[in-house]
Amino acid sequence: SQQGEEDPQALSIQEGENATMNCSYKTSINNLQWYRQNSGRGLVHLILIRSNEREKHSGRLRVTLDTSKKSSSLLITASRAADTASYFCATRTSGNTPLVFGKGTRLSVIA
Amino acid sequence: DVKVTQSSRYLVKRTGEKVFLECVQDMDHENMFWYRQDPGLGLRLIYFSYDVKMKEKGDIPEGYSVSREKKERFSLILESASTNQTSMYLCASILGQGSYGYTFGSGTRLTVV
Picture 1 (cartoon, rainbow over the protein chains, first blue to last red):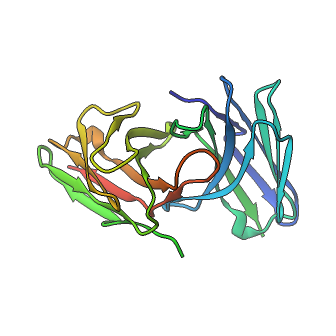
Picture 2: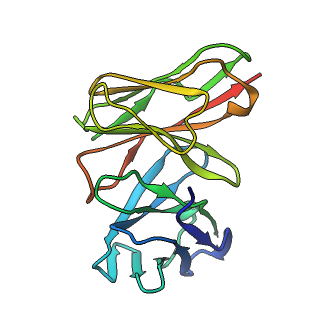
């Protein structure tokens, strides 16, 4: 069951630009998380936002959550070539359920 | 640093073989998960476990089984490997419920020929 849907599927930007990725989901959630995956590797947890939160920051990352629209966005500011990766959103519907992942956005940052 | 270790990065097996994928975590996490990742399909949940000797089916359990005899180890078993099980397999663990992110292993890329 695919809960989250990322948009766009692929994004290519120049180094120093901001990158915005969006995630839409279908059912009510407990929290939403963003992960990064470098090519051929495991996923790395970036940030978690709870359903009662609207915005969260971590370094160059900014995540927003709009539960009325069932959507979230991940903004990476001042992107670097090292940010090139796939980014996934994942949702948890309640405290005791496994995460459900979207299909990801592939970000390419060109130096 | 906390770690989830998957025993093999790359594995090639023959159709019909019984395949064991091992996952070990050193964080005393109760909850462990197996996902498979395929192009265009994202991550799909195969099985998960909330405690020793416990297991729950995910979205695509057919053709797989799991074993959790010790808290730190969660094994995925392909009873009779088939070519449509060629995939990237990802193990993850988490402490408790809710407010944490998963820690993933580096993945095992399995090719069934």
